[in-house]
Length: 134
Image (cartoon, rainbow, N blue to C red; front, side):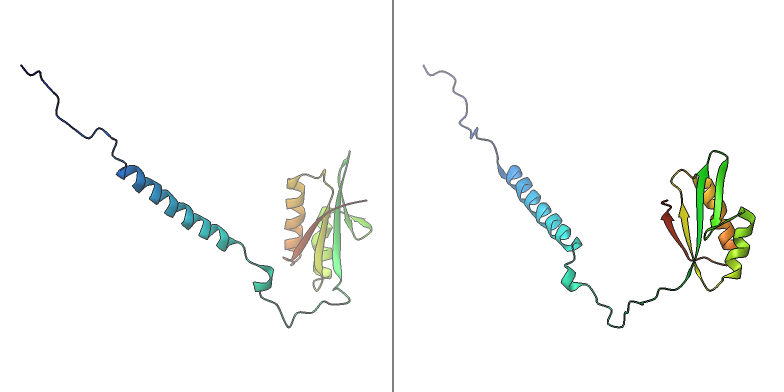
């Protein structure tokens, strides 16, 4: 008498989906690597301005400085102490000069905004910004 025997099957796992996923990952990383290498431009490939020139004497600038004291902010036009309301007058008097704004690191952003408004009221929109060092 013969006993019951199970059907013969192929019990090995199907590797086709895993191979598909591996190939998709390889393609993905190749595309990403290509995009990443395109972000970096070699210096030799950058455009060169043939007509550019460095001026020996830079144009004069109106220098406005703001320092912070225990009593509050102090404003300077060049070396001369001035008031916030007079900044627009100084800027409009020297309208052909760009403004260089030097600010002490302790000065708050609100004070800088007030000075920038005064500079704009004086008719100048081209401002170079820097940190004030004694």
